[in-house]
Image (cartoon, rainbow, N blue to C red):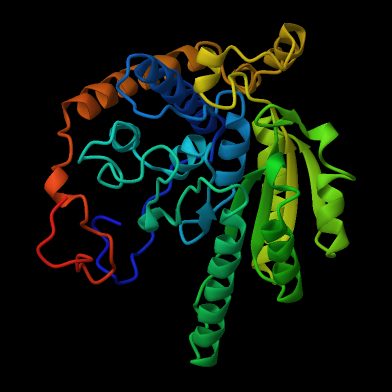
Length: 350
């Protein structure tokens, strides 16, 4: 990763999400960021398109509001909401989507591979379910480090860091997820598995592909599991706080199935392909449960409008920053390919 020195990076500063107003502002930031990204895809500024997170914002904000600075997380191909909710600056993420040098990862990660080790973000991942074993490994490493500190007599080691693995319902039939559940349960690792069940794996209805239930998969491994309204930020937050507290205290992994919905297509390519696998009535029914409207209702009159204006100004500045950033020099295409900095063949330039 550009900027990685090879040494452990101290935790960065996660986004403040301790109040209802802060959580609403983050919901609005994620929604506005995705709407801006969609416009930039349409304009041809973002190559390859994106997987929009619009509609699912309550899951990212609710879960990330339960985390501490030392916690880690892994994300998915639909991961902009997760990394923003954790504290990544929107202008850096937008520049990353545009493939610019001032992007979060120097323009090399793009939409599906954003990472920030200083915030414990171990990376979004384009492979379905692939973040789960990474989170399990991070939780094991944190557990070993904690045990080592205790053995050395450091009683002020602090609460045990927790690792969170986000994944969609399409990952429920992936073997690597089941292997991760098993290992986390056997070793009682502090992992929170968060299934964002939006009802569809690309265009395939989950009901036609998933036998049993999501929570049933976790229960088979003895992992406490809870189904929660993924359109309600406060409900997600409450469930995440319970699971995270249990994990920190040595209670082992937890599992949340957040029932949510994406208002846009699986990928921006759907607009061109004109796919029809959901009825307008279904989409509209879920829009009536919009997490932003529900969160705004908890605020004082006029508060949401003021926060909306603040977010709009922030995103306008982010767009200016990202579009002004330079494109990477093609001569550096092989940089960061190896951890030691060496190129695969001396003297070869792309």
